[in-house]
Length: 67
Image (cartoon, rainbow, N blue to C red; front, side, top):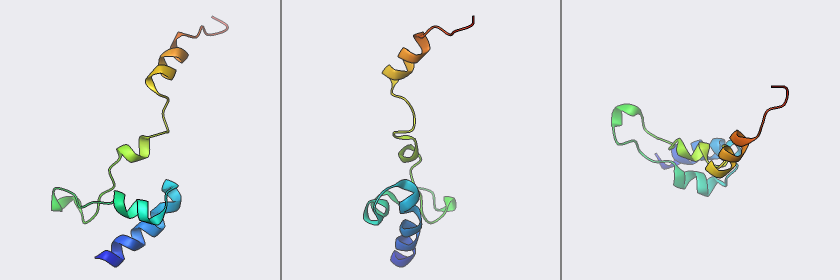
Protein backbone atom coordinates (compact mmCIF):
# COMPACT_ATOMS: atom_id res chain seq x y z
CA UNK A 1 0.00 0.00 0.00
CA UNK A 2 2.87 2.41 0.74
CA UNK A 3 4.20 2.18 -2.80
CA UNK A 4 0.70 2.90 -4.13
CA UNK A 5 0.37 5.96 -1.86
CA UNK A 6 3.79 7.18 -2.97
CA UNK A 7 2.93 6.79 -6.66
CA UNK A 8 -0.34 8.67 -6.21
CA UNK A 9 1.58 11.43 -4.38
CA UNK A 10 4.19 11.61 -7.17
CA UNK A 11 1.40 12.09 -9.73
CA UNK A 12 -0.56 14.62 -7.64
CA UNK A 13 2.33 16.73 -6.30
CA UNK A 14 2.85 18.86 -9.44
CA UNK A 15 -0.88 19.48 -9.75
CA UNK A 16 -1.14 20.56 -6.12
CA UNK A 17 2.12 22.55 -6.35
CA UNK A 18 3.48 20.72 -3.32
CA UNK A 19 6.37 18.38 -2.66
CA UNK A 20 5.84 14.62 -2.77
CA UNK A 21 6.34 14.44 1.02
CA UNK A 22 3.70 17.12 1.62
CA UNK A 23 1.30 15.34 -0.71
CA UNK A 24 1.82 12.00 1.06
CA UNK A 25 0.99 13.74 4.34
CA UNK A 26 -2.27 15.08 2.85
CA UNK A 27 -3.53 11.70 1.65
CA UNK A 28 -5.63 9.78 4.15
CA UNK A 29 -7.85 6.76 4.42
CA UNK A 30 -11.54 7.61 4.16
CA UNK A 31 -13.64 7.03 7.26
CA UNK A 32 -15.96 4.79 5.25
CA UNK A 33 -14.10 2.06 3.36
CA UNK A 34 -16.80 2.02 0.67
CA UNK A 35 -15.47 5.44 -0.44
CA UNK A 36 -12.21 3.94 -1.67
CA UNK A 37 -8.66 3.37 -0.49
CA UNK A 38 -7.36 6.97 -0.40
CA UNK A 39 -8.85 10.38 0.11
CA UNK A 40 -7.62 13.90 -0.47
CA UNK A 41 -9.57 16.41 1.61
CA UNK A 42 -11.16 18.86 -0.84
CA UNK A 43 -10.65 21.97 1.32
CA UNK A 44 -6.98 21.76 0.36
CA UNK A 45 -7.90 22.46 -3.25
CA UNK A 46 -9.90 25.57 -2.41
CA UNK A 47 -7.25 27.27 -0.27
CA UNK A 48 -5.72 30.21 -2.06
CA UNK A 49 -8.08 29.95 -5.01
CA UNK A 50 -10.86 32.15 -3.74
CA UNK A 51 -10.73 35.70 -2.44
CA UNK A 52 -10.72 36.18 1.30
CA UNK A 53 -13.95 37.41 2.84
CA UNK A 54 -12.59 40.95 3.15
CA UNK A 55 -11.64 41.06 -0.54
CA UNK A 56 -15.02 39.67 -1.61
CA UNK A 57 -16.91 42.32 0.33
CA UNK A 58 -14.71 45.07 -1.04
CA UNK A 59 -15.30 43.91 -4.60
CA UNK A 60 -19.06 43.64 -4.04
CA UNK A 61 -19.24 47.28 -2.93
CA UNK A 62 -17.56 48.64 -6.06
CA UNK A 63 -19.98 50.43 -8.35
CA UNK A 64 -20.40 48.87 -11.77
CA UNK A 65 -19.86 51.06 -14.81
CA UNK A 66 -22.57 51.47 -17.39
CA UNK A 67 -25.54 51.12 -15.07
